[in-house]
Image 1: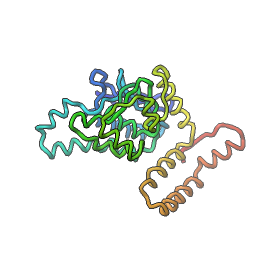
Image 2 (image 1 turned 180 degrees about the vertical axis):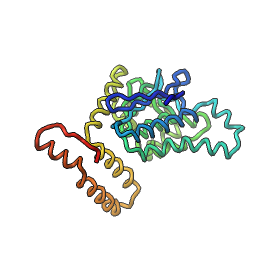
Image 3 (image 1 turned 90 degrees about the horizontal axis):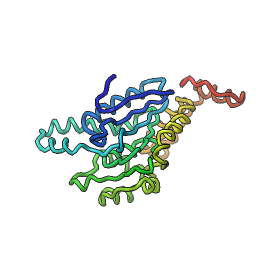
Image 4 (image 1 turned 60 degrees about the vertical axis):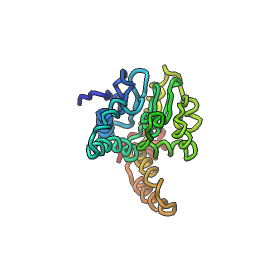
Length: 261
């Protein structure tokens, strides 16, 4: 499938989705958001894909919303504005339902919605040249849709400071508050992202899917009820072909041959 605002590449069971509007600093416009959703769903439904890397072309990861698009919204009818906003909502909801691990390779500035995209990913690796921040208040806006993801990543008190000050953080500062997991030199970024992706891809795809299921579905669940839910997932795991294969491979000192079943 041809895309206009992103690139989609598959190599060794790893899909790389690249925001590809470098002249505009890879904005999260209506078009790019829709294509991101389609590409992420495509990778998620492909049984051959074991992990997904998100990155940006050029010097930026994503500078967030398109300011020219915001200007057009001043005259857009409210029903249409609501419909367009649902595209962004769909993207950020997808982060909690996707069955494949998402790895952010933050190659440069990731501001506003770009920071939200980083926070949404399961693992985030940043170039030492990356900059992150919730800069919306500088424009008279609020980081509405991305707020839940950033809150989850950095905690209540820190997200409040980030939102109200609109401060831009260095990659190292972002790591200190758990917004990104690792910081590497720019020339090592994609190598490190692929290394992590390959590590995850070496695990049972069923176990990875169940791990994400367990994490997201118990997060807002009553504490005691979460044990019942996890006990059910445990039964699925214990009766799976992958667990039988994993145990056999360990005892036989060989690499497992996962079926994802």
